[in-house]
Amino acid sequence: MTQVELDHILKQHRLWLKSAETEGENADLRHADLQDADLQDAHLRRADLRGAKLDTNIRDCWIFRHVKVTQDALPWLILHPKWSEFKNDVQIHPS
Image 1 (tube, rainbow, N blue to C red):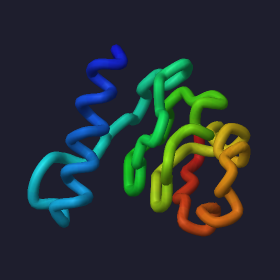
Image 2: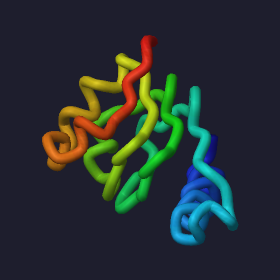
Image 3: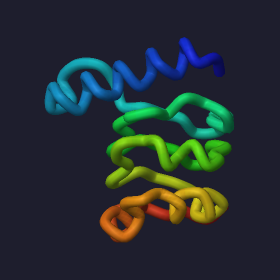
């Protein structure tokens, strides 16, 4: 996945959230390689990140409340400055 493709997905996801799910579409990033991706200010609320390859850049996303992730994402998610605020809202699935 290129940064341009990721930017488009995130733009559509933001629109989906702002429009109460009537426009755009939910970000389905299952199995996406997000290592080294620019997630600066990304709004990942309710995104499906199960199986996505993450790294320390997850710290740059603005919010990830109610995301779906697999257990292998936890080491990266706990690095987020707001992990303690969001941890009860993250849906963790087996890897």
